Length: 239
Image (cartoon, rainbow, N blue to C red; front, side, top):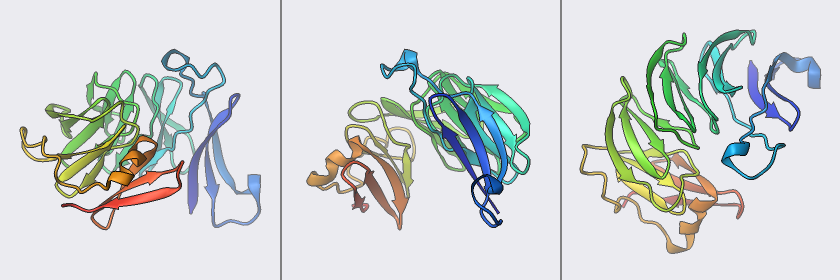
């Protein structure tokens, strides 16, 4: 069994595969190491030349997907050898992969590819965060939330994303999809025109601020809002 990770410093970045079941420590457990270009975003922020971003890879049965030097890079899961690259400007979030392929976002757009690198679709709408994907729909969040057809990327609907730029990956909860920026906003996943209903979840007043500094997760049919700064988790149940 192996463990895959992306590591970065101001001067270096790499993808690692580590054997969790083998003997030895440290370097003895490294199955392969692939150097990557550090991810810097000077034109998008004011943090300076030394800013790098750690982005977790997406993994399927055969490949590892992660951003590298203005592209989405596919590596062989067993050996770390290069597979294919797809242009992807300023990716700031992890790709999302399953047996059918991978979807990745960057500032310049969102792209969906087959496992072998064949492009299914590409749209100009970019994002600072990962998509949420179901069998039929891909949800992309920025200042608004858009739903796109998984097969061809066609936009199905657009919904208000709430206050500010979204800082978390959208979360699908049953027949609803939630986003978090300055607030938690819940929209219906159904037919266009039904996405304006915000009464699907009951949000405690003392927990609403958590979305500004946390992420969204789903567990046990509940929406979980995680606040890494306050060290708290708030669970919201469908109303």
